[in-house]
Length: 174
Image (cartoon, rainbow, N blue to C red; front, top):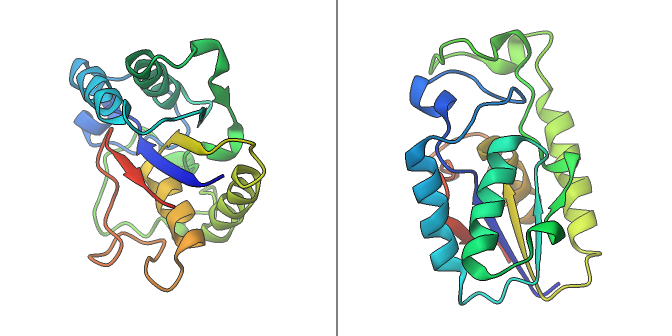
C-alpha cells in the first residue's frame, strides 16, 4: 500500500443531537449525505483502488456515497468490524458532557483495547494489495489509527495537537 486515506462518516442524527453514539446505529442526516457526496467529489482524483469501512451503517452509507462519486463498485466495499467506533456502554444515547472521563465507566471499551484494535487494523491495511486505500470509519477510531501511525505527533485524546476528525472529509494518513 502506498497511500492511505481516512474519512470519518458524514454527520449523523446522533451528532446533531449531541449524544454518545459509539456502536449504536444512527443514520446520516441529509447534511451528512451531502457531506459524503462532497467527500466523494474530492476523492475523484485520488485513484482509490480499495475501500474498507466500519460495519456500522453511518460509515457504510458514507462509503457507498463516496464510492458512487468515484465510480468504485459498491459490491467491492469491504466492511470490517476492526474499524467500528469505540463502544461507550451505558453512555450510548446519552447527552455528551465535555468533562466526562469515559475511561471511568466500567462498560466502556478501554483506551488500550481501542488502540490495540487500531494496531490490528493498521497491520491488516498494510497487507492489502492496493496502491491507494480509503478507510471510512469514526472519529475516536480515526484518532487511534492516526496515533498508531504517528505516536510522537498525535495522541489518542482530542487535543490541539490531535484534533478531532471533521465529518466526511478525506484526509491523507500515509
